Amino acid sequence: MSKVTITVTSPLLPDLDEFHSLLKEIWNSKWITNNGSFHKRLEAELASYLKVPFVSLFTNGTLPLITALQALRITGEVITTPYSFVATTHALWWNGIKPVFVDIDLQTGNIDPDKIEAAITPKTTAIMPVHVYGKPCDTKRIQEIANKYGLKVIYDAAHAFGVEVNGESVLNAGDMSTLSFHATKVYNTIEGGALVMHDEETKKRIDYLKNFGFAGETEVVAPGINSKMDEMRAAYGLLNLRQVDAAIESRHQVAIKYREGLRDVDGISFMEDMPGVKHNYSYFPIFVDAEKYGMTRDELYFKMKEAKVLGRRYFYPLISEFATYCGLPSSSRDNLPNAHKMADSVICLPMHHELSREDIERILDSII
Image (cartoon, rainbow, N blue to C red; front, side, top):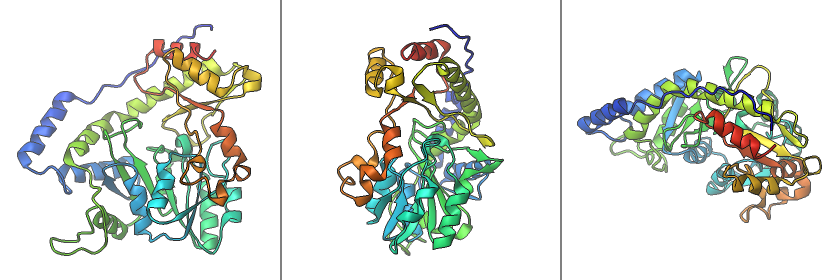
């Protein structure tokens, strides 16, 4: 391949001395969990940074999904996408809810609003879309459908930290949005997650549900679970929040160089930035057209692996292909042609804010 000039800025890592100081403060306070001072600070700072009214922290990104469904008392059937991480649908299953899969839009990987209404039945109570790769769903269309049929909308926004559309946080869409702060995400608390909601009363209910349902020392108001974030990870998250903008900009530079290197490669396509959207560059998926490229997606994937370039076929297989869900009528391959096409052609390239110029060139060399 022809070499390209690449400059990738690398943000500072969280200050380890400051982290040590925060840990010492936690130790001296003798308060390491249960809504401590760092937990409260992180909730407030995240709400401000994300431009949302209320944030409730969780110990991972799956439990907010499960809890949102509980808090909104969702039952029956929920319309969702097969093109996501399996936790999206597992949250429905754990609540005794039947997932109903609809196909996706090939431009974004998100649920196709044009397919939703046909899937609604008298048992449908909600829609659970996913902002795939941080690309925002058509939230206006989805909300119009939800309003028409009296449905709740819960967004799995695990990939959408900091994403905005025309200056408005995408996390304000729907009834609630959930976030993941797993170590692989653009912003992380090592492991963690959050729920975004619109009003104080809902936050109070969520906070009860994530702490066994306790509303006081001797009062339990709901069958909650234990999903609180501890003080250690909240302190880590506070430090990470200070450098997340630099991390996103570095990822942006990586995305630019990937596009420059791959734009003229026959049979390889990728997603462009969406107009009016503030992206977080969580992922960089490419799509392999085997006939044009001369190699199948899997052949390229294993070729990259041999070169010690670890891409990921993300999301493959579809959730609808897994044993728990493949027997559902909506899991039929005929019902999900676009989702299968994307799942069968995708490879997400390595994406991190500390990728060096040499790293990026080696990744591109494994493809071109």
